[in-house]
Length: 82
Image (cartoon, rainbow, N blue to C red; front, side, top):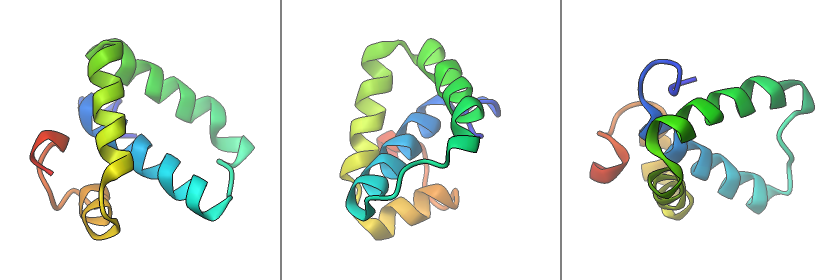
């Protein structure tokens, strides 16, 4: 995950994207992924602090689908530039 690669803000943003997609589709995160996913998010949350993490995650939740895909593929800059 991108948090482990030194990109905590992007990780938080992509978590917001994923949360919005899960909410829209009604599909939960696979249980097998929870431990790894939660650990990576904890790294991002610790690196950013709660306020910055929440802001980046909220930005991800609000991205239009095209921009969310571009962000996930690394075709756009950090969330502040998305």
